[in-house]
Image (cartoon, rainbow, N blue to C red; front, side, top):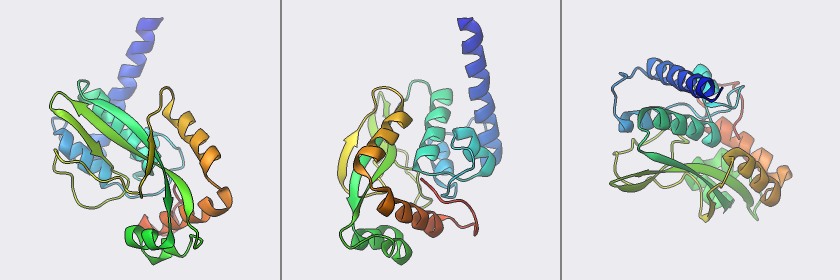
Length: 201
């Protein structure tokens, strides 16, 4: 039974990798840098299925789902590179939002600011560790330098078990839905180039 489960997971991982490289227009032998930049280039927005597979099918994702995809791809193709998902609890004011995301998002935040939870990854290899954030399309990663998380300063939480259960717990503990949801909706509209699409989490 255990062998069958391993084979099933391996087949699923291979199918995800093959679907991704086809959709991204990459070669199967591409570098990890190209994979990171291809995931980064996927438009921001919530897919109807909040999974790595859903991101590839609909070619859109949020900080949670795009990093879930990146984690799965790297684990499949470069198993010696450890991927650590990190959640950052941070506060953002209208002024900070305007600098990061523009006026539309800034206008969705009360003057006192809000608290949100953002997800990024740390890649660990023999050469060292590097912070990678592929949430929004933008400047490509150079393959060696830390990328600044696409959020404000805060404190980081590295999940000890299921990362998504941990994130939901952090959202429930620190975030006010009445102020967070308008921010998330505006973030989706500001960064999603496809009108009428779903908004991100």
